[in-house]
Image (tube, rainbow, N blue to C red; front, top):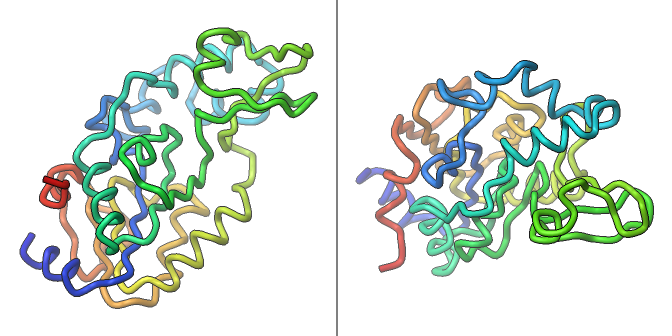
Length: 236
């Protein structure tokens, strides 16, 4: 922890890249943990959350999506709060996230690059009308637009490409930072996991409960809760 504190103190352009482990302490289960989404269900989550399943089984997809991916009562935890504070004091320049829950923004982070989209944005596939998460939960749980078209959550499903503009922005941020903190992710999902290769700065830090394929590249590895590790930087 002393080493991490010293690295942050000496760095002026930090980028954070996080995954599901950042939100687990907000009550949102991860994907690959012992109690994760991939351990439950009649069909594998990769199937249920694929573009093909979305197209061929819309009602089953909607039920699975609302049950397993939408947590409207979730609140930011210490990790989200710490990152927002590091941005506020000018240390952190960007948050790159695989999460779709919007908790970084709710905690106060401004520059958030959502690689996999967000549950808070929804678009009619016919007329292009935009819907908030509140709209979906209160009036359009059947994902039917007022025009009769189908509303799709703006989240990246399996078999779908990442938003190229968001991915390029993440590459730019990471390639310019002097400290890259990766936390709460197993670095097993591509192409997101490949972002580590764009870092050319001084300090690479990996914070995760378990080992990742990239631990050997890091200057500092901490196997612990990301919220516990970053709690020191929560605004007092």
